Length: 174
Image (cartoon, rainbow, N blue to C red):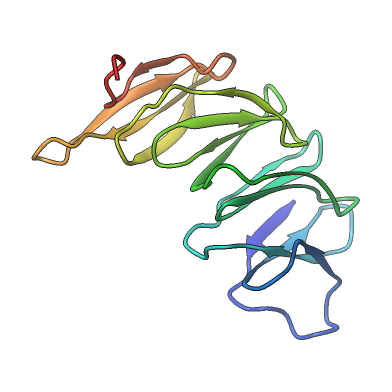
């Protein structure tokens, strides 16, 4: 499976275009499944700032972040499986061991199923920024921005099954 964001729409008629809430400003995503024809998804978005993409192969689902809209699409059938509209998704990571996706904004995390159903939402982990999110030995690791004068980043670990957080920069008592 090859999937990537296009800088501009393809020339009309050169590829099958499938719209997903495609009104106003749109994000154009090229899908090229290994055993199927290539196509382009046209995703409506309210803000062109971020556009994270994550892919699961079993089931064949792509998670496309488009500002306040995050789309869950079966890339073989080209069907919208779910849409999340209450999280400004700035990052997405597949969790293939569970068949889930990890999504995040600047402060917290959410794990969702391929149809967009929420499994859990973490506590707030950061004041205003997350980076270097990755999996290590089954756990989610990363850094949370701290509002200290030196602009430091604090390490954290997140349990992918429960959302339990260890570390981070946001005080637990807040």
